[in-house]
Length: 132
Image 1 (cartoon, helix red, strand yellow):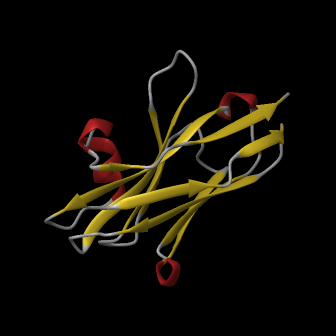
Image 2 (spheres, one colour):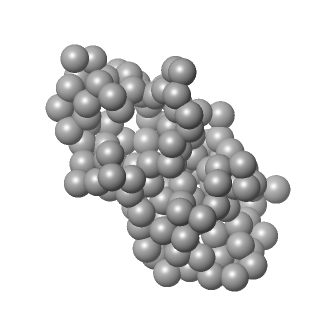
């Protein structure tokens, strides 16, 4: 069973930065994707970013492209989401999730074709609040 622990949320001002961490353990397969989703009050869960173990590719939603980056530290089994130029509309609970696959999967495939309910493992979520 994959275990996920998120950290790094908090309060930031508009234009500020935060870094979220996602520590993962317990993968059964070599091919997997680690994704970040967010959900604001009254809104649907949104896929934000993803990184693939199969090919190292990354995916970003249009709403965060150019402002967020994602990176993995395999030695620490941790994925980081760096959020720059934060906006009030980035305020949400951010969730880290894992998608295991028996075949190679790119980040765009994972985010574009696999709805969130198919991702097998989820963290507890971390609150990000951006003040205007």
